Amino acid sequence: MLIGELAQATGTTVRALRHYEQSGLISSSRAANGYRVYEDGAATRVGNIRTLLDAGLTLADVAVFLPCLDGDVAAGPPSPGALEVARRRLAVLEARVAAQTAARDRLRAALEGAGQRTDMRT
Image (tube, rainbow, N blue to C red):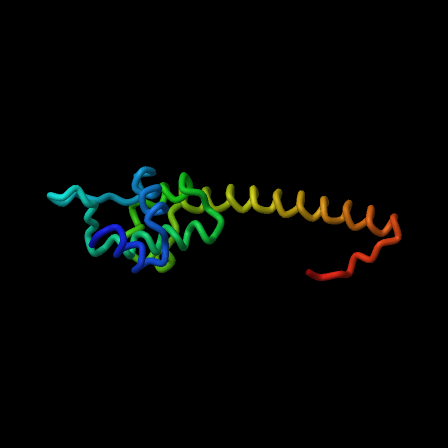
């Protein structure tokens, strides 16, 4: 499967696939014409990478899951390393949410202090 075909099959971009490859999460061989060629299982691996990224993990976090990226990541029991990565990432996300909530509350208070409505939705 060529890189464009893999991108289309997985709903990702060629650029993202190159980034995953540079990060060591996927691999390819080269055809005689120099094109990247991926094995059929690459679509499953990319799907799992995207699932983990969508859950808030980083590419570095996803590397911990390398041994199970070719199967159903969600079906198997999590490893202690995977659980630790998930706990750390959750803590980071919760801290970000708290910071954003505090910033929103400060902005809302400033607007209300200036006599402005804050219930507008855009």
